Length: 90
Image (cartoon, rainbow, N blue to C red; front, side, top):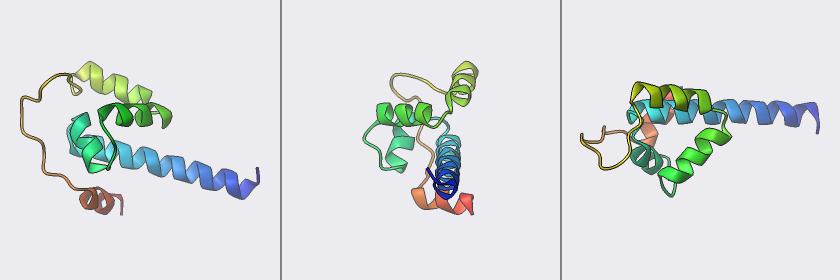
């Protein structure tokens, strides 16, 4: 693999991690809502992407804080769009 390809892959992964973290924060770690915002199939697909992106420590910290809940949501979803996430990255 060329140095350019390695750099592109590194930058792409950093961007992916940033988008995931900003989306999770904006949706208060509501995985179903975050998956919807990102156009993903479901919360399981998002969870796999979180781990693939190397965000297991962040996941564990959020879980420990009680930010990630299972079952039926007890509070309304934050009003977040993909466009808002992109704007936050700029």
